[in-house]
Length: 84
Image 1 (cartoon, rainbow, N blue to C red):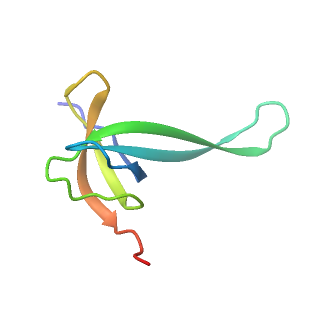
Image 2 (cartoon, one colour):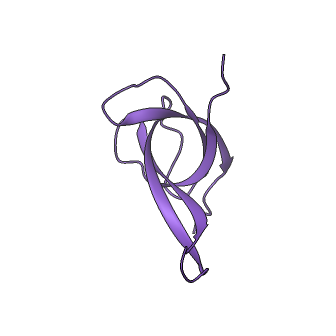
């Protein structure tokens, strides 16, 4: 069996039940000018226990389709958000 994709990102929304939106940032080089540009992708991820909150850094893993847009599952919370 092939290994599943695993990426790390920051939670930007946790308003849904058992779901979170994870923003994953990457850097790409502009093909013409060579400048490094930050690109952000948003993924819907399944969070069964509702433990992840906004600002947490989490690891998500590819899985079977759970709904129309959810194809990722939160596996662990790498770093909790700082509380004010």
